[in-house]
Image (cartoon, rainbow, N blue to C red; front, side, top):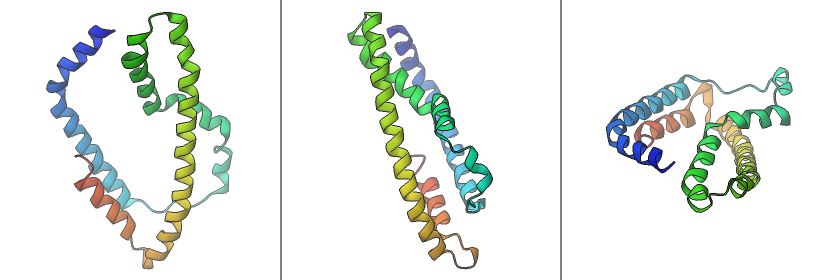
Length: 145
């Protein structure tokens, strides 16, 4: 496992430029998407997709959680513990930590959504996009740094 880390570390200077370009292009794509998007309408037909089971299944596809698990195992756990039984006992602990993190993120997102929807209605005279344009500017100027 250490060999893989050294190989990736040696490749980092060579791919860093391209990763920065990719990140900047992605940020510009997000900024354009924010400008062109319209506020989401709450539709009753989509409520069948908003279930606990659907959210639970989607977390297995969450790239941030996958990278979190790989990083924790490769850097911290495997470096200290080599016994497969002990290493496998960390999986439930990491699952609980991920669940708490995602739950905090969901609660915060729900609070921000209700807060921003009130602001969006107040700031949006005649379909103006003041908050969206502000987010666009922040994504372009601050984001790729």
